[in-house]
Length: 160
Length: 348
Image (cartoon, rainbow over all chains, first blue to last red; front, side, top):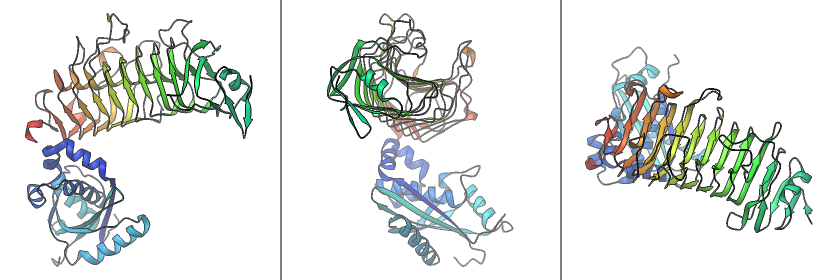
């Protein structure tokens, strides 16, 4: 398997479609896609709920799809974008913006766990099963589209 | 008849014969119909033909002069049954019918058979006895922004199209046995349609009788449809003949019977109440046809649908749950009582 330093995923989805799904699904949608901590972080924000879907879809693409045992809670927002991620996200967001004219305005860091963490490790560092995996994402709303960009990397030196 | 040729297009006015224009223009023709009523049935038998009206409110095709049509008879129909527009011919492909109303025919409003590349767009098919838009053994099909009502079987049907590669989108169907009927057809996408006031809004059925073509409903997408208020009663013994060839059905929004690898996502299925006996007990039904010429339903994915306010059940599943995926659906009354991936509305 080819070893990558950073995994990248992008998701672009019509905002109206996701808003409709969030509205129709209500609490069931939120419970499935977001963790309790995320719901506390963005209480009463349908846009944040919709963005969570796009962001996690971009993480799914970064780790290579939905592995066996996948759970939406494998990805959990944990706070503001960390310093390590900024140059990587800026470079990727710039490239995405140049090709799509879509702007990413909001960033956050993510914990990655469970089956998705194992899938990421398999692509990043096949011999380091215990290495911590770090994630970060940016997203934005442009021209009726929700666009999300995720990066995933392994913190083999505990520096992230 | 005075037909005006302009840049490859033929213009037809009321009182002139559309069929004559079709026959004279031949393959690749664009036939433009002026506003008004045309009393005739049509046979499009050449490839590349585009038949365009001024819109279904303005250009209307009604029964009149009967075109001689070399097309297989509609199932269960006698020889004197006449369809409004028949599309069929040796190797025929790339035919478009757009912007007109077809009503009152004893067969189908539009009947296409073995066509590769068919677009039916902005057509109103109303009160045609058997079918509104009936597409059989075709591929590369688009049925878009049509309205189909008042037919004994389906408003829009894909029948025995194993490689349909079909897009059926943004149509409105009502007062038929089935709003949209995917009858032994595969690789079809049904998106953003509204089906109301039928006995079943959207039915995907894998079931064949002896001597018919191979059946199956595989690899379809059913997304973002509005399936509500389907409470007519169809089926055997029905006094008005609605769906009389089939079993009694009423109160069904969406049914997948013997379907394989169908994804159902983001649909709203609500306020469907049966008005009589029905072989299906829920507004969303996932079931088997194995005992009557079909198969079990396998490998289907049902996600993010809102299925509420229906009687007697919102969801009825008679299928192997290990071979289906349910996720993120909202539904109150289900059979079995608990389905992982279906949450009750009260917990919103």
